[in-house]
Image (cartoon, rainbow, N blue to C red; front, top):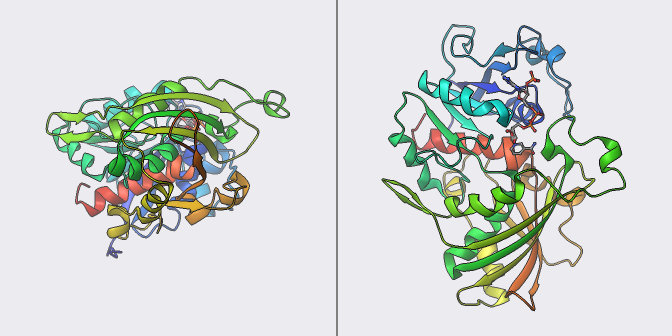
Length: 355
Ligand code: NAP
């Protein structure tokens, strides 16, 4: 891992929300990035961060961050103490406002890596999972603003695509059927009321099924100068909210063009390494996909924090009487599926000299 003489100054948009707080937590001791601006809505602007946010992370909020004054998400306000633009903005903005705010900031010359859905399908905006499609980052050179927008996929899409990539690359997947059991932190803070989720399962998460059925096609697509040529694959998704705090679990059935053996599938997962691992990026897990042979694994409480929440756990690979195979995937929704995944994208941008 390259050591920097001077850290890169970054800002966080939506810093008071659940993804925003995870950004703060993960960036506190980051070897390359240094938090220099915290921004949120009018409701929070002007307040000290420790007063504007209801800190729900399990680590203690450091005094110097708690004392920082939250600012608005406008180009004139997003400046470091020295009055300069941060070199990069991480966005954990609510999707109802992220689209317009991010467009304006990119036009004003800011580089943004976003968790929000709004720009994911813009022609020249890469939809990134660094281990899956590192070459797609080149798309930002085609954006016609002085800044840039790069996006992170939906949290449940990320876990699934990490497990599908090594298989699609080698054996070509034709059809995927997925049913999810998604954690309540995926709905932001305070999220679903306790009365609705305790002793219960909610069989609906707004727009989630559409995202899981469309985003993988772009992520697994081929880079071209004219944008991404989507891969062809039929995906059907059913998404459920369950009473788990962190960690999305997904039961997946797949059909291949040519059915590989069980051993070939397990080896593809075990051998899977990509640019973040070769470049030794600070947040890259050593093994992006871990396969468990124990029948009861993976489980959210036991495995969501594997490799600091950046690795995906897979288990229960077995023959399927309708498709070819079925298996279970688990990934941490606010780390690999949001803030951690986005930070890894930024590390890849830095390593590829795109910052
Ligand atoms: P959240 O807890 O509701 O936080 C939303 C943030 O947006 C807050 O900081 C809020 O600031 C800010 N905001 C709201 N209205 C604003 C406005 N008009 N101007 C500026 N800032 C405004 O949501 P979240 O769960 O962190 O999710 C953030 C984004 O990440 C969403 O787009 C979500 O879809 C995406 N995402 C979430 C997850 C997850 O697991 N949670 C995973 C992947 C992607 P105030 O506190 O000042 O209102």
